[in-house]
Length: 130
Image (tube, rainbow, N blue to C red; front, side, top):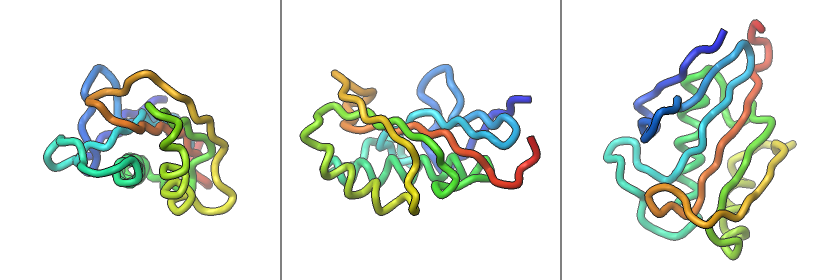
């Protein structure tokens, strides 16, 4: 069974997709961009500030699914400019416990709303029924 995950603690989907889907003990979280969930406005600041908001949004979606950033097994990071990798990576490293999840980082031409970073995740909830 697939169950849609929705939370007002993260930005509402801006297209025909779910914030996340929970399937048994697996959570597949859609990519988050740096939107403030209260205003739907992009956060102001550099890529580090954007990454902080993205990971807070992702954490809120995971929490609504019964998981946390500690349960993440795989992420994909999308960056508009690979020169931002170091700043993004600093924030990212603080948000994930050891061992960090597997990750791919991809340079993209453009992201929604002019974001510089987007991150999606797959998590597994330990002890959850299948």
